[in-house]
Image (cartoon, rainbow, N blue to C red):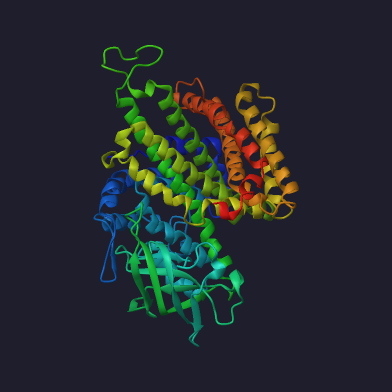
Length: 594
């Protein structure tokens, strides 16, 4: 049986001491009342729910899974009661507008909630998680009538949202989709087609599921420029807000998956289902990306959540499991053997996990704070800078959080040895559960291609220049702080490698059409590591101010920061070499030789 304790101390440290969130966020219009006490109260209540209600259902939900019979999806035992408690607590509408019953709290807090819920029960978190993006897209692009009809119920958690993109014949190439929509003449449309891999596509948790569906109008241009977005409810809604007839749609089957078995992944069939246009005709992909970008950040949080859960359980095991003696002499001579945490290999695995997850938590919080600033800051230039930074970091949060999530859960499983490979200890579930995060909401290679192919050149390199300017400001501020040199100098070197490599890619990719695709994953990892090092400099600065105060938290933070700089960040050298190797080795061999 796994255990989970929400890392509230670390969360508060990053929120208050590293980023001074109370000062930053309360300065934004609408957040004046979001004090440190309010933030801490939200975190504490979420931690209780996650620890006491959601996590006890994690392993049982995996064992039982979802069932599908007579067209109805049934979630594992306990999920329905837990969801009711979750919704009644107001968690579904944490960041939603008070105009529709939401609490109007910052995205930064929503990130922490997503991480805690993911650690507690990754499968469960997908049900309310998909509603978040649905609400965001509908708020940004829906008509007043659609907002009035659907948002209050989504915000309250009585209804749930789902996004429908992928079809059997096309995965990420949405330009190939075939789903159709035909106008009914009354402002509604008949939507027909089949969608696959629809997370939380149906459940017994809510009264209605509100699907956002990509489809083509009859006059649609070919490719991705001819896609429109439609709202298609499972049950039609009467004029008085009550539920009416079942719409012409349903679940064809649910997938039998490697992991996240407590989440229903559905095949959805739309047979002339009644739907309503969201946004402008043929502009559906842009509307969907309002939802997609939110969900990509959410997936990054899922990856971080599993790293945290795996680290906690592997650390507890390493302190308890006796095997062998420490190389420099027995640490517990009264025992038959020393606990395995004395061994360098085990320490390397655990410190690697901790150094990564704490940096990624800080980076994800910073990115979400940029989203808040981009939405609410009074100054247009500040909004643009924050939006640029959030856009640049979105693929890094998604791919970094999920990629390191798989890496770290595997490392922590290894700490358990054979016990990690059997079901009862729970590590094998984490490895299975987290693996999907590298695939859905755009595979990690798609994220790397977005970074290297689109974000790199956007606005003449404006996004990357903004990142360099922001980090240069920090370096200038800290250059005279000799006590921080052990953190600042490795970051400065990594940043220089990233800048040089970026310039090399820009200069060489015009002559080699395959270059960006061949090096994209390595380049994204370089950017991720550099961004994490940036976070460690900021955390080391905050921790050093309290080091020696008698609170071991700050001294421990510095130990982990040093580990990151010494044992994680040096990957930059090999990644730099991999990028500069270009595409030749990958593309030289004839296809027939494979």
